[in-house]
Amino acid sequence: MKKLYGVIGDPIAHSMSPVMINDLFDLYGIDATYMPFHVSSDGLEAAVNGLKALGVVGFNVTVPHKTEIMPFLDEIDPMAKAIGAVNTVVNKDGRMIGYNTDGRGYVRGLKEEISSLTGQTVLMIGAGGAARGIYFSMAEAGVERIDICNRTPSKATELMRTCPFPVKTEVFDIKKAEELLPQYDLLIQTTLIGMAPKIEGTPLSLKGLKPDSFVSDIIYNPLETKFLREASSAGARTQNGIEMFVYQGALAFEIWTGIFPDTERMRENVLKQLGGFSC
Ligand code: ATR
Image (cartoon, rainbow, N blue to C red; front, side, top):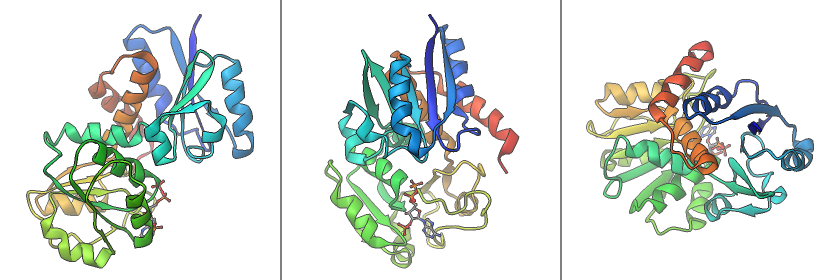
């Protein structure tokens, strides 16, 4: 019998996951299908029970349900518990188990560009949900020092305090981070600043940026944010948010099927879909 997978969110119509994951099922000859399900917050518990009752093998969870779904699952992987958010669920013999592949996916994508992460001096911009997964996963990967700057520094301090892995961190406001910019090898932009439709924003000035640094932005719409454009003009190597999206999907696929899929093919697939509505 065909196996059923899916993604739940609100809104969900523009999710790129169904095309990306169904293509992988075809590629690997797996008799399965992956569907988008529009689930509102007040229907979340019923949806989880319904997916379980229908024998859905696995599903992704997207905005706004990543945290709210946690009490409705039977088990939560330690990393997802620490982050406080789930983006991937697997149905193991009727038990719904939650994982978070966002942060680890980000790190996997970064490793494709930077062979040794451990010695890097890192500045992360932002301290929201996405930043949490990335910071914990970078710490898990053995990065020794990650400084954080955020509009609200107290949120960054709170994030740092709750990290389950050892990592040295100083927290700065944006102005101080701009002053200290020449010391960083790697910048990770995790806020929504610069995302369509407000594409003119940047989170901080790149005036002091080291020319041989690497600058990464988790936004993929537009593919090149103003921040990345400025970094590139200053001589830095850059990476957009496609990698995080592709690798979080690849890790979810591996959890469900045991196969780590062809990420190059996934990237091409996503870029083709973005051609439709990205600016
Ligand atoms: P996500 O889950 O996508 O990470 P989030 O949890 O709402 O979203 O976090 C958004 C991040 O973007 C936060 O770091 C937020 O800064 P604050 O902690 O000060 O709120 C940052 N952010 C969002 N809009 C911003 C703006 N206009 N200026 C500066 N920072 C902004």
